[in-house]
Image 1: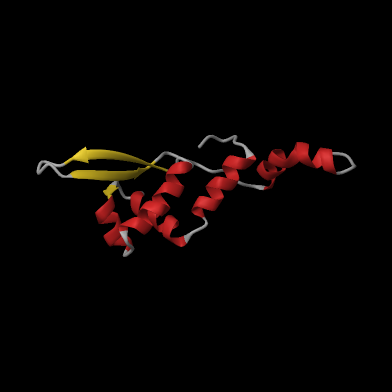
Image 2 (image 1 turned 90 degrees about the vertical axis):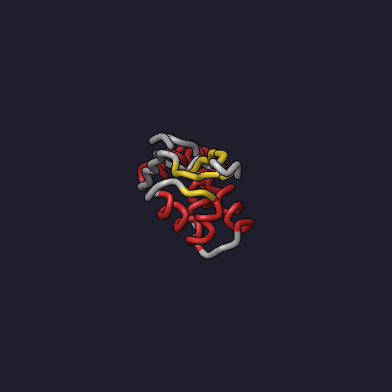
Length: 109
């Protein structure tokens, strides 16, 4: 994620990370990529539930997936972290909402 982003991207990214399972997924993937079954076992959650969490993270480009075929012919879907950095402070928030504030409030901005 770039230094500058829209309100929508920021809100969706924060929403995606506002879940303990998703933060654990990010923490686990910070150590290296894992395939779905391995990740589900490490998190102690079902694969269908894991896929829902991974989908949320993938929608905002926090993780990415890659389908690979093992030597035994089994398809394995690997997930890994995307490179991202989210800068968030009062100045970033102000800049994102500055025009909206100007339109809605009277005063000097």
